[in-house]
Image (cartoon, rainbow, N blue to C red; front, side, top):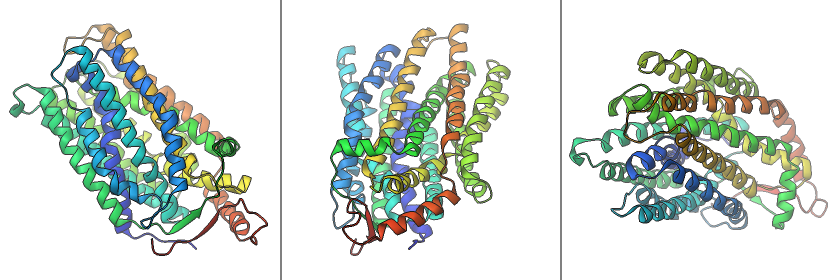
Amino acid sequence: MSYKLSPFEKIGFGAGDMAVNVVISSMMLIITFFYTDVFGLKPADMALLFILVRVLDAVTDPLMGLITDKYTSRWGRYRPYLLFLSVPFGIAVFLTFSTPDADYSAKLLWAYSTYIFITLMFTAVTIPYISLIGVLTDDPKERLSANGYRLFFAKIAAFLVTIIVPMLAGADIWQGDKAAGYQAAMGLMAVLAVLFFLFCFFATTERLEHQVESKPLSQQFSLLLKNDQWLVLCGVCVLGTVGYVVRGSVALYYAKYFLGGDATTQSLFLSTGVGAAILAMVASTWITKRFCKIKLFRYSQMAVGLLSLVMYLLVEPGDMLLAFALFFLISFVVDLHAPVFWSAIAEAVDYGESKTGKRVAGLSFGGISFCQKAGMGVAGGLVGLLLAFFDYVPEQPQTEFALTGIALMLTIIPGVFHYLVGALMKRYRITDEEYRRLLSTLDVVRHEPAGQNTDTVQIKVATGV
């Protein structure tokens, strides 16, 4: 049975990603600039921080996936985490963007402690959240639509971050104390994140209950490695996230140093990219009703690579108008794929079940979350190392070599990663037509008499959730 979701529930589902994107947007667009130009970390130390903390995710992400597979409650399998961890999540955001008045060693210790804390909280709420779509409905069109809502509201959150944080942090009331400004601005974002998570919890309903057979972790990993379509999405997630985060992380540097913009210009430049991404969410939903979603995914990412090359070749330092126009176009095209990707994860889980007769949901979503954060860690480390390589000096006029490096990090370097995403998507085969055939196969398997396929996941309508 296919479940239709009301607009209110889709909005509630989207609110969850607004909360998540307070962190994601900050990590992709602000935290690198915050650490170097406000907090005071050396680029090389920042790079090491981003890389080392990602090692933690290799343990926590699969573990969180296993926990969500194992435990359920009267509120469902995934929604309780949004309720009980929303406040700790908000506290982690606030502390991460707080700058202690201490020497460099103590500040470095603070940076590691708070970054680990926010990483753990991010894992604890994000994996249940991205898994939630799989139990709201089994209708692929409804999943795609709900993910369209989700990503639209995620970009609204990013838009709020790019407008409010730089403007509030640079306001006159702080008398030049940027550290206090960023702490207050991100504190406000943290409060909003808590409220969004609570709204998501109360507005959504888990209708499908996956009765997951207990399997050893080694067996679950083995089953995932047999799911070639899930492996494709993992590769896509890492490559795409690296490209996205490198571009986003250097956007403030580009606006400030390459274009010579003030705080308002910097905020507008970030907002231009996010505004384009919001429009892309709407356009993607319209396009996928008339055009193959997988082809849209593939060709849009390859086009980003070409557009990035064009921007590098045409835009000179201080060329505001052309830079804004091309940045808008790149940001629009790069996000056309986003609703397709997040709905594809649930479809890849179903594909794995149809192929092996056994379902691995929690670890699948946990693995994708790990890939996303691994990409963020690689990108953050890459940006730090490249800033050091190009002799970037915070709050100083930059050399021509440093400006060239900043331009490369906004255009060609991330463009290469997106082009590779498009090339890799040639291996992804679960189109809408293929998924309908897949569901027919699963329907037969799931209704086999008890005892004939005891390892197969049984899906039933949940009552009292």
